[in-house]
Length: 142
Image 1 (cartoon, rainbow, N blue to C red):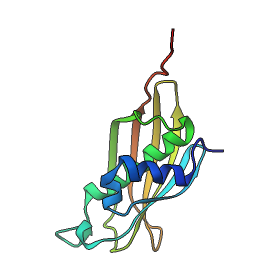
Image 2 (image 1 turned 90 degrees about the vertical axis):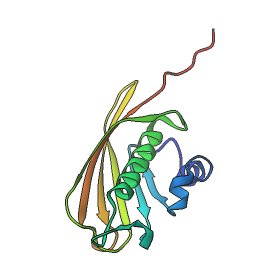
Image 3 (image 1 turned 135 degrees about the vertical axis):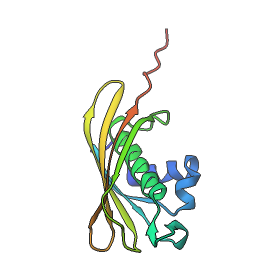
Image 4 (image 1 turned 180 degrees about the horizontal axis):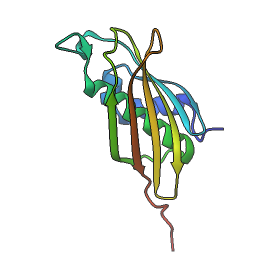
């Protein structure tokens, strides 16, 4: 069972991640250590050459990683990206993009994840990302 629901994460996006809401990004599914996000196709996401821009794919992958880590640690809003790497594999068609994220390793202070970015229509792999999130220490009262 994930430590937060799809609705709770979408609420966090609504309140704390205006850049994701501006792009109509939505979390569709969440499990313990996994997440599925959608970035709807918009003409403003297209770069010269007729492909969806790299920054849009990176934004989707990083938001998906955030959902993956919160699925395991709960609403720890100060979990932040410390490393991000992406390989663009092929030109995506003009369609929605999906990000399928999963945990690779969860430690006390770091979470390592991977995300496959797929076309929403044919589920063709267009990018692969890996990233590390820093998890803040649990505050203790003395």
